[in-house]
Image 1 (spheres, rainbow, N blue to C red):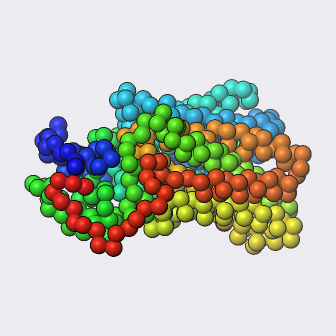
Image 2: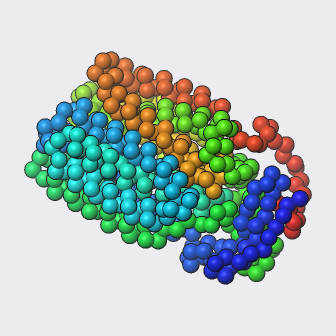
Image 3: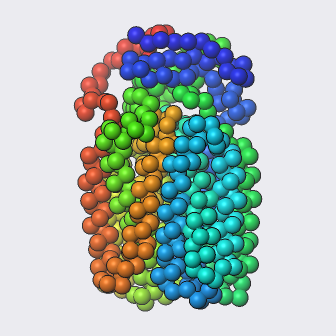
Length: 478
């Protein structure tokens, strides 16, 4: 038997807290317009724009590194380690930022404002500091922290506003972090040299600051336990609530299909409880391996294309293809995961990423440019698509209330990935060549796919019985 309590929100809107048979509380009755003053769709489009703005830091860096090396007198290893440190801090800030947000010490708006300012500092440092250590501190540490604050805030916030269809929404927002870099990839390949690099980087820093800060002004998290007023989280039969009576309902097929494949978490897991479940550590290990392969591809694809002799146009185009497909793929698999289920889609994506690494070797061996672009396409798709899947899978397994911290822990796997995908990846290339390094990357992907097969939602039976004619939902129970 569930328990319900009628209350009023600060803005005057009535809501109802409903507890299901497992003890999870859902706050139902307030619409997005009650809480925001406008549609929650704005909490998809604005984070998407902010993610587009910060994408230049990672996905266009590989196209700028040759000019940076010449301008500052850095070695190739220096530029790789700068990006590796950036990735380390970009991923590492997610958990502490989430911890602060969940305790009310850092709002979504303030976190993003702070991130925008730090991103500007990072680009200015990359433009004007010749000393490698200082550049690592400026762009790698400060810029990485800034991008991480923006990234984590955008991803967590959209998941909280769309708990019933978070796959498609999270994937769409996450996609901006990849294809948003496309214009800068071509700028860095064709209009970026030692005579103008400082001015270009300064302007990019200002661009990131302005775009992200404008978006951040409207950012706001929903109340804890909030659930859309028109959705029943416990059944494929969806409920539609009127403003005055939360017991009048109608159908919503899209949300029904998504919740049938991806049921809500059985409770709100704290980070300690999520760790003890065994699933969060398994997700972390899978992220380490998969993100490492993805970062390896981002870091070395242009160099591999040039080493094979494909020329700057094919090299730039392959990275452009990877960037676009990486981003579009994130949105596509988010939508697909609402239909197939998050786990099945994740395994499919990781296997595709692994096969693409072996395909790149094949294309290089044949010296086939079109085949190389095909596998760059597949590598870009797999190398980005798993991120929104983990971002959606985490609250699916552990709930929304502690998602900023829980996803911060899962995403922190990218800390390790940045080291072996970029810096250590360069060492493997030096020792075994590009073909050996890509073969290792493909093997790691297949191991990661095996780990993903072991994932399951904590607290829910392995096999669930589906009744052909489910009982209608009463006024008292969900």
